[in-house]
Amino acid sequence: MTAEQENTLNGVLAELQLPVVAVDRKLNHMTLDSRKITGGELFIAIPGIQSDGRNYIVDALEKGAAAVLVDDSEGFDLSAAAGNESVFLFQALVARLDRWLIVFIGNLLNS
Image (cartoon, rainbow, N blue to C red; front, side, top):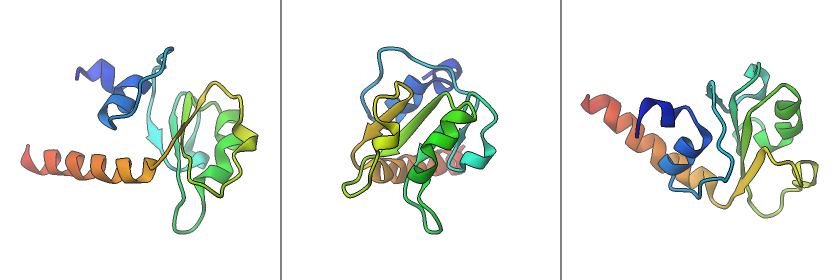
């Protein structure tokens, strides 16, 4: 994967082994914290220990997130994000992120 691909939504999705989207988007950064969004970021909305990032999808979009990846676990109301073309729902997103982070950290330690 090239450095340019790593800065796109499809580059991230490919790394996570998730289906790519028809219209790719350039990304400035990735964040789990919607308060850090200034425009162009990928917001990853997952359940957390202190709060659930899925509660902040609308806030992230209003602040200019380029895209939002959402853990589509059952039992969570995602109606606020329904129909938004910047929101992408994935089953078991947290598990994919866990595996991706393990590989990413392993690559850092081995380089």
